[in-house]
Length: 329
Ligand code: HEC
Ligand code: HEC
Image 1: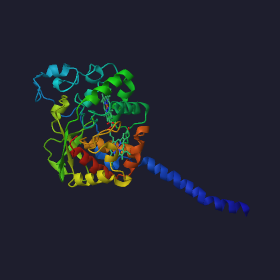
Image 2 (image 1 turned 90 degrees about the vertical axis):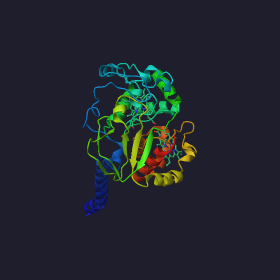
Image 3 (image 1 turned 120 degrees about the horizontal axis):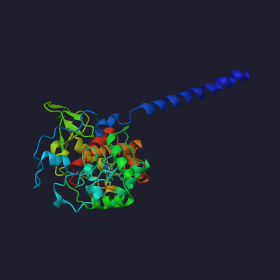
Image 4 (image 1 turned 60 degrees about the horizontal axis):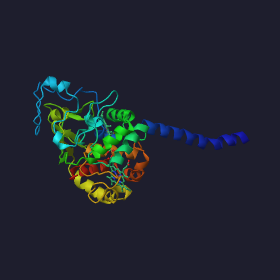
């Protein structure tokens, strides 16, 4: 009798434990990025964007003309506009060394970056160092499992020496911020497919498709982007009303209740170690806010952003990122 009583009393506990295991298993299996998959583009579909063509290669505003052979032999990144930036240290502009790709191959010499990377121009030097150290020690990952572009940045963070990192951070922090993204509100966007480098290519001859609840981020000239022309801008296609809705969330702070200006500055231009957020491409901003929300970005410096990011739904993140991209940096 006593035994039966004990067993009966134990039952709810056993059930609760089973339920807890089930729930946590489901949480582990749930795809953390499904609500914002557009901000994490990657795919094995293509090897290198579109065919480069036979050349000769030139870009607007540069006297440089390269044949196909010169293009293939040239150290990357190609410096089309040396007058635009101070001399770049080797860690930024190349030549690379075994196991270390020069920063500008992915972030460009003007720091604008690609749709899959991040713009670094004018970010505080100490912030840049803090983030690279976070990639290095595992505090900064991607919410998307195995996101290949983030994996490449982690590889660089593990290979770079403290001296090289300080040189690179100084270089990027001194570059002026510029307008390298424009936002177009629309009900449709060009049909695209993801490139393995983490950007979207326009599907040739396929027209447009409904934009749905996404932002679609595209290089305005993929061919020039692929040959390192840092004058190329991006276009962010966003749903109708996204910019206005984003402005409201930024002003009030969304669910977290702290207006973004209170830490990022009146014009969202950044203050001290707090980075600028005005005029930054929507894909990066949305991805990194989601990484903060899910805990994939967990360096100590990110603590003040946690409550902010947790107060934003996937739709809020989309609209905030469209609004920020629309601002003059
Ligand atoms: C092979 C490509 C690649 C190279 C080379 C590279 N990065 Fe990155 N970097 C990335 C990608 C991709 C991201 C965005 C990761 C993400 O969104 O999860 C990134 C992000 C960053 C960020 C975060 C920006 C922010 O606003 O928080 C910093 C800082 C950074 N890189 C610095 C550097 C420095 C310094 C170098 C050279 C020492 C470098 N990177 C070289 C690909 C690269
Ligand atoms: C309480 C202060 C605070 C508030 C309020 C705040 N931020 Fe931040 N934010 C920070 C700090 C500090 C960082 C740098 C985090 C780090 O060092 O890793 C940051 C980083 C960011 C980044 C990452 C930038 C990058 O280069 O990767 C984004 C995007 C961002 N904030 C957006 C917002 C938005 C949008 C809001 C308003 C909804 C907001 N923040 C409100 C303090 C704040």
